Length: 482
Image (cartoon, rainbow, N blue to C red):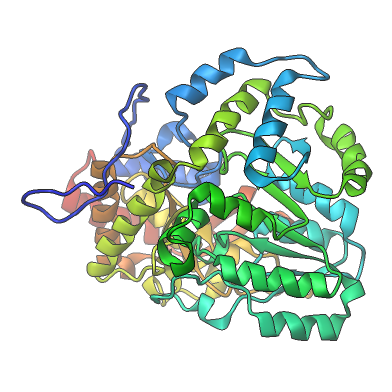
């Protein structure tokens, strides 16, 4: 992993690639952004991409492809059944993970749907180090419940702990004793805990958790969607792994689990997904779900062109120079904002830089969605689209009350190989301005609230005229056309 030194300035992350294709960006004036935010119901998911200057909503399906990935798309075999593209993908995944059987899907949540359909029964318990929105929704929809057993220190916002995604082994033991091993459908480990700031889990912790599960006859499942970042952190933060290659670490992790699934929109830099099943009999039991819900067994709802690109992307994910770029830019952003006094989730994790909304807008009650308000304010003050990761992303309690999130964050995702350092500096500048004017930000309330995954399509409105006042302050400092 190269370290580029500078003669007369502090070390900054360097893009280890050159730009060959560009897409023009447009920064709408602040008053126009206010109008667009109102039309979108103060939900950044509902904004038109053409109205956004920097799209930091997610790294899912929006990573830049390499030249080798794009050229690979030309060899795609578009046969409905028996596509050679599928067999190339299957073989590449077996080479990396050592698991022979692949069920292709159109993306990660399709994997979660199939896994839940097959394994989850009403009343079951599913243990996780931490949930993801869709992974939990699929479980609760089927009448089961999720136990999040992350270590307590994982929820401390400002920290120097290298592996805040670690599961608490003592809590797992207690849960098995309470629920009974037979009632636990599986233990799901997320390698890179999305909803607490992309924080990684160590290899040793995964090993200890899976050994405990196997001793009790419990199925083990790895969500490898964010594995690329987690591999980087294991390599750089876990002492016993520093002499291992990324490929070696990947195989060591894979050997711990019965099932591995992934969103190719993250792992592999393409648009697709897949479930790797170690046991042949179990693989055949699950085949029908692909033909019923996804497509035929040799494409699973994916474009074969994307599949060919992902095959190259899997190899690139084993390249430390490539997978280091995201975490290094995220770390730079987090460190710079932390030095400015902006409350951030530390240390910097994978996926994106995460703002601690609960502390930044502590005057907004949790029931008025502090992170949702902050992410709307960020678009107003810079045209930057982030994502709410807090109470708005939770499901309501059975009695209709809000389930207050353990952490209340705004995520600024860093799609791989997309943004430059100067664009990152722009984000840092606008976040600092917004933090200095945080007292102007108010809460939100629902106008239209979907029953499930409401953060995707729900429509909200401000509880006061705070957006107008915030935009007025912004224009006073930056002018009408910014």
